[in-house]
Image (cartoon, rainbow, N blue to C red; front, side, top):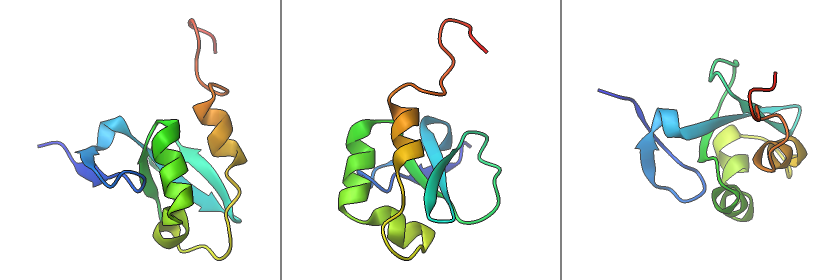
Length: 90
């Protein structure tokens, strides 16, 4: 049986393999590609809509227990294609 997690953006349940784990390091949201970084994590679909909904609903703040608005620049870069492997690049 495959593990199931809830997306903090759309609040839909989905298999863990289809979601992206996000952790907060010094109030900066960082994508945890391998889902092995220490600390609390929040799961979100790898779509701009779900991330925007999570930010708008302040779901990352509640799930990760951070104070103040977290910096989402690294997460936005990941969603815009930076950091993804493209055409076999390293």
